[in-house]
Structures are given as C-alpha cells and as structure tokens.
Picture 1 (cartoon, rainbow, N blue to C red):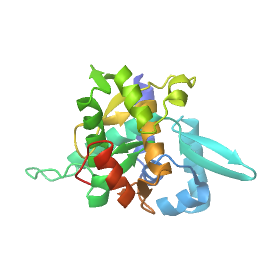
Picture 2: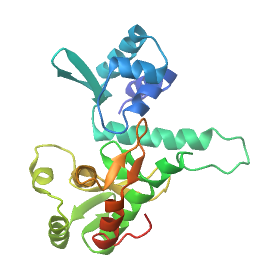
Picture 3: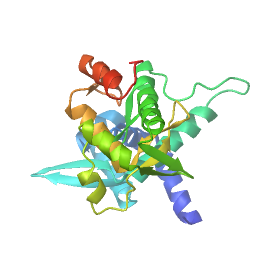
Length: 233
C-alpha cells in the first residue's frame, strides 16, 4: 500500500460520521442510506455524499434490490482493518497513566458479538480454543488449516464446509483474527463465517437489536456444552 492510499484511508476513517457508518456495518449486514444517516446523525443528503466516497474508495459495496440500495462492507479485510483501528483508538484515547479497558465497554459485546461475519468476544475465542484443543484446526504463522479430524467433527456438528471450501474466492478457509477485547485469536475466514451462520440459523445465538452483540439461547448453552465442550455460557 503506498503512502497516498494510506493517507486517503486515514482521511476517510477520520471523519466521525463516516466512522459511525462503518462501525454500524461491522455486523456484516447491509443497511440503507437512510438507516446509516440516522446512525451517523446527519441529513440524508450528507449521508449519501459520505457513502459515495466510501464506495469509491473500495470500503463499501452497494447491493440493489428492486428500487432499494443497501450498503455493506466491501470485504472481510475491510472489517479486519476497522477492528484494528478500533483497538488502536480505544488504547490511545486514555489519559497517561490510566490502564486501558480493552475492547468495548458493553458487557454483552465483550461476551459475544459478530466481527463482520464471524464470531468474536469471549465466545468466539472459546470456540477457537475448543477447535484447536481437539485438533480440528491448526494455526501456523498467521495461517490456519482444517484437519481431516476437523472436517469430520464439523460435519457431525452440522457445520458444512462444502460451500466454504469450494467457493471461488481469495478469502482463506481458516485463519486467526486477533480479538479486539480478548487480545487472543478468534476464528475468521470462510470457516469462521460458516460457524457464525450455523449458530444463528440453528437459534443457538440471537442478535441483540441495534448492536453487534449476540445472546446465547438456552438451546445454545446446551449445544455449546455438549457438542463443543464450552460450559461457561
């Protein structure tokens, strides 16, 4: 990345309304310009100008459904950039001598949340730890693989890797992502997305309205304990 591109991204992320819009899209869903205007606290016309700049810069992509247009983050790499930006911002905002509160202040967000399209927070890290401990996933120098035993284990749990592994995309199947609040890796890549989708579709987790936070259901607590060996939720 050249210096001009770095400066351009810095200017885009440094505007409070644009930063608020990007943060609102960190749960992986698409929102309309009107919804993002409300999030940012700006007029619709102002929001449209911001969204055009973010799209032109490759941070957002636009999806059309009939007459409606929706905006989402352009890729998982953009989400990772924003997560890192949040880490730096939270650490640098404190007066000298004060210990930082790592990650979000919201207890529910720290407990379980989405990081774009994969699971983060205490739950995301616990799930990653469980897969590594069982030999289902192996990490080496920032890269990850799903072992043969892992494929069997995930299939038994009802998590399909067929689409994740064959989709034509440069996105890796499995990689560690440093968690904003835990400062340890949770699971990203196509496998991370597949796990997040599975947990939501099976009603093991539910979204908290207006937030990236996730709530573990009663069914979810049972499955986490019995299938994944995670008993703290």
